[in-house]
Amino acid sequence: GEPMFTYDALQTADQGRLRQLHRTYIPFSVLIDTKYEEEAPPPAPDLYTALATLGHELHFTEYVRTRMPLPDQAQALRLADGVPLLHVIRVTLTATDRPLALEEFHLPGDELELSFRL
Figure: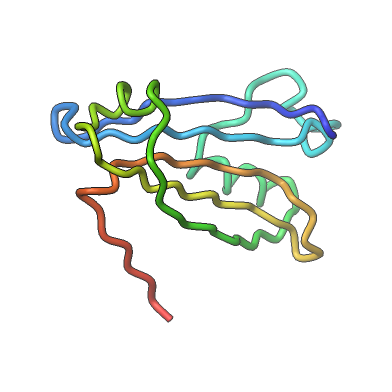
């Protein structure tokens, strides 16, 4: 229920062969009384540095799932029919669990492997 600053990016690598859709949401309340009222906050990973510079201690929670892509996502990612999408949501939180940002990543599900150090 809160207004958000939002931006989308199609990120590519390996001469455009590897592609991901990246969307970022930042509540406007996080940006009030900062220089980001007048200028756009930087994209991640520089966003994390900017939030830390504003005095926030950052913590992250990620949600990972697979699903079939929407038609526009399949087209943007150049997915063949039947290829699933890897959908990652990363929430950036303060030490008191106040949300500072949410990032959504949409990636081809047939060429990825996730690895987590525990």
